[in-house]
Image (cartoon, rainbow, N blue to C red):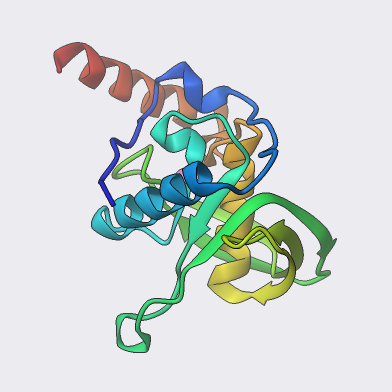
Length: 169
Ligand code: NI
């Protein structure tokens, strides 16, 4: 396994729409493993392939507490098939926008259908942080970021700050 570089804003690739995975083969599995290692190292609870520069509909998640031990999910072509009626508010962060947190209200439970690491179709009912994280990562696959939930004024301030940082690097 190897650690990958996480892309941050304002890199325009983060706005790309990711395309479906045709087949979960060894190359895809390697990418999944590298993404998971990268996410654990960051550390974060979710990572989409676009965040490491690969515009494919692929994400990894692990919201387990440290004392629970690792509980990773690998999802290719994830699709939400049901959204709950109650909502959950969470202050979300994003590895592509370090240091920024946005309070976001989303459906509190979801059913997601995806292809797992072995290439088998799965359906998962999730609530709590896992439901929030799934929706956050799915947004990445459509080029949507947490700053899109901010007011335009606040968003512009964040973008300006990151542009300045990128120039300084
Ligand atoms: Ni993110």
